[in-house]
Image (cartoon, rainbow, N blue to C red; front, top):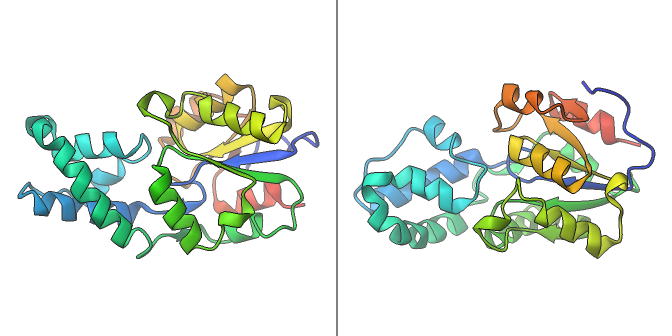
Length: 221
């Protein structure tokens, strides 16, 4: 499950969102295909769209509309926004058991650092009734601020006055592990999300949890 017990010094756990805390891929794929249909562009298989998730909505839509339709990219952003705000909670849920990570039994502070637009993030965590369980919530300020850039993590550490050695990031992708390493915080990779397991493992995260239950066991007091 892990490469060792969680350090007693960890006082703050920072979570990625998509593929780590929540399974949102089907609502994302639905919204992408509704967007493509509105634009009279060919729809894609959900499995193909799943591979585009993780680097922010702009890359998601650039890949979905394709290079040949680059001129319509801004149009796709506008159309997608309406569809995703309407459908982002159709099937999206916390992974099984992970509500117990956020219920207050564990006294460590919790924070959220996601490449997802904060507009969508806030809609989802409010709908799932977990917003108030995070001491800090950070999304990207612009494209250069996306993980693996450590900016979001560094802002959280600064805002909560927590040194890097007392924090851990939990995420499913190479972007998460690289961001953690760049920020000087421990990295816990999960194998049940959307990231490439082999590529994530090759980065030698400090902890690895194959299933949501493994993460629950690692972080439960």
